[in-house]
Image (cartoon, rainbow, N blue to C red; front, side, top):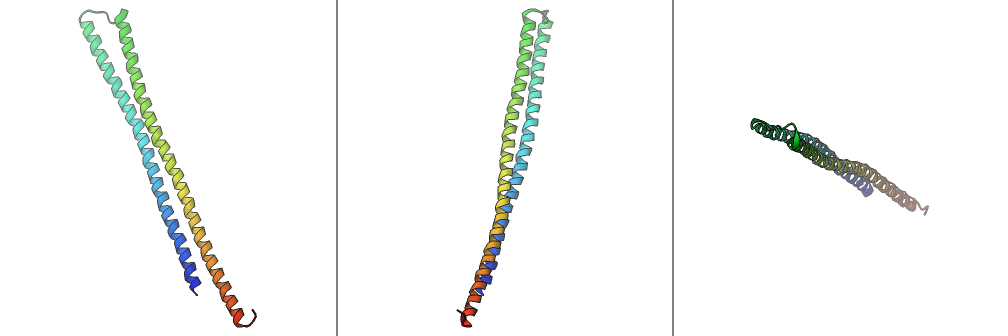
Length: 160
């Protein structure tokens, strides 16, 4: 009757492996959620940094224009106007660079989140397969034990 214990052990082993796989799947899903939150944070942080950079640039340019205007220089025409326009374009380009870098960082987090989701799905499938394997092993032990008992009984009855 050892085959019954063997079958129970096989079933328990399959369940233990499934539990372990399911735990790893849940951890991967949690990690994916963290990465998505990191991506959102990176995007928001980039927007804030770009806005701050733009405000600082406008403040500096405004101070510069006010200073030049206070000295009686016409800042709305000639080379000073072109210089101001160029500095403003540079400030806009800097803000866009900051946003672009934040988007790249966010994309990295999103990519990692996708990898975690894929890992979780594989772990879930592994857990399902472990349960099936445990059940199949248990069934094999029961059938093997029953066959052995039947064969032994038939031998005792003189049929073999």
